[in-house]
Length: 185
Image 1 (cartoon, helix red, strand yellow):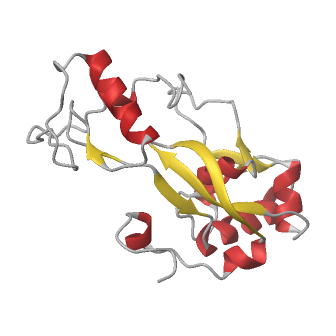
Image 2 (cartoon, one colour; image 1 turned 180 degrees about the horizontal axis):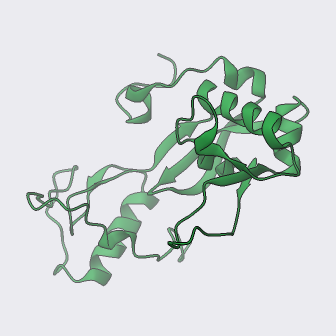
Image 3 (cartoon, helix red, strand yellow; image 1 turned 60 degrees about the horizontal axis):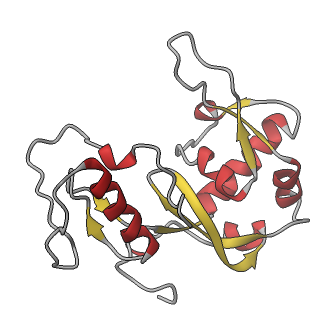
């Protein structure tokens, strides 16, 4: 667990705001001397303990989100399958009704991104289904209900198995995602 979460610089996040205040959500004062290493460890410990607090560097909300594969994402994987199957990369932002959730399919191992880059070095937005993704679309495989995520990283999957049919019935719930309401509401 020493490498959880990965040390990839996420604790240095700054979204351009200059009005942030580093106040932990659980009411404790930040115990460190504000070194980057101590701040990273504070963020890692927050995620390990599955609590919600502010980042000591920028005040950003640090929380392991509990993301289900919802109906919108299930429709996206079906569109991806129709457009390219398991063989072809598809420009997901070009799919009708794109919600920019196509990349989140990778959390469950359902899709992979093209390694090719645009001329400016950015990602191309091209994805294709894995064999497991095709099986999921064809209702021959299931996935755990939740991906536990922070800063676009999936740390683990948990929950009862769900099929694509189950996911198509699950609308997006903002309040649930943010942890304001329980799963059974």
